[in-house]
Image (cartoon, rainbow, N blue to C red):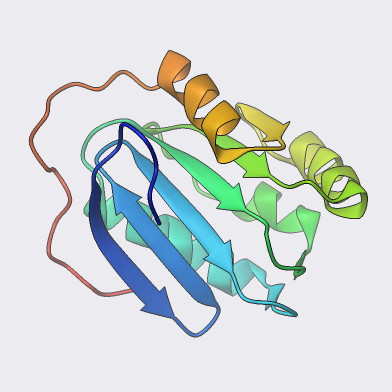
Length: 141
């Protein structure tokens, strides 16, 4: 996945979709029809904690239709390095779902129609502390 002004460092492929890892942002693209459970979301957050040592933002790129129980956000551990979640969708139903999810997340959470708009927002809240990769080679998830 190409994002202007960002260098893709790694792609992590898993059963539910892909994570695209950049220095200060992670883009998640979940496969069509998947239901994200608390266990899976906690696994993602553990992966973030283990692999990111500088502040970062997360983009949920919802080009595919999938479901997530918004209650799972209440079960997430605090991650002080995660500065915000941006949902990118151009689908009305997905936008409405994201607004519900936002009410359950204790942090910055916004919805956008383009990845560029999400990146622009995240760039205002994610201070890039250095230009060296701080992503570990740990591939466990």
